[in-house]
Image: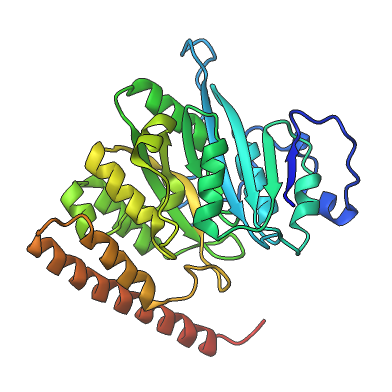
Length: 329
């Protein structure tokens, strides 16, 4: 049986575990300037709060729905919650958490969040893609996106998205920049971020067919456009997002927003944290669905798969050697 909670409809008192309260804190007390977000200490640190426009600048407030799939992510979920619920601006927020029957204290954390913008449910599912599809079906916003339960939004990200889509009413989907962080919230692999940003700067659909340079946490789209494109392909284990981008890109050009919107967390227990060649082979097979006989793009995509696999292997080897040479403490 599913556990379902909608704090905007329920006045019931919920017993909250003290350790969950300590981790999450009172969501009513989240700094509204986004200062709870972890900032990088390098030149890549451009995650500064962007002030929201005056409330009368746009006559209509957009509604933004964020879906977060979660399964046994109690370690990182509180940080994700703060990054979502600290967003402010000329929009209304709906945060939907779809949990896959976690057993690690996640439900205590969710019960401890006293915020009417949160709706959550917990039940066994068929995996991440199924959870995201369920959440997107529940979404009532004009704009939708998903943010995994270990990733973060930058301060002011949702206000920037709302403003950009208000100013560009013909744009159906939007892509921003995304940093990579480790388990301790430290920005890592800035060269990868710069590489993907260069791909965004010269975006063409054919380029996307040849390589996936889009970072999932930094993508947003109009709900009705997404429903016309269709749900995530739940048969794909690693790259349902890439398949979705190719379907969206085939239907409409994206709006590129040149600012950091999110941080993608890379850690040992994450799906992407383990370098698995099958991830990139699946990506190649996804591209094959849309190449339509474009042999040059097929060859370039295969070359890019080999290039990326070897680049990540070199980075991992360098990291291992570095840790061996640096004494502990």
